[in-house]
Image (cartoon, rainbow, N blue to C red; front, side, top):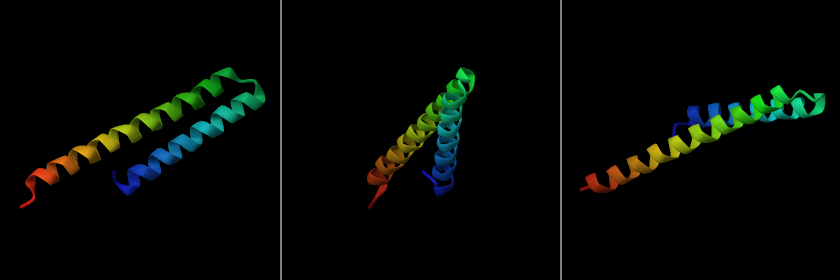
Length: 65
């Protein structure tokens, strides 16, 4: 996973947390749900990047001399 992707995913997750908390504080269920969705999206992207990294590591293990 590239450093930039990690930062983007963390930022997206943080934005989601902030939206969820703001929604809870104001009683705005739509904002709360939007925040939770952003957190889920960031987690899914993170998992996808980890799968890519693992596949790359496996490929590297088989192509070493």
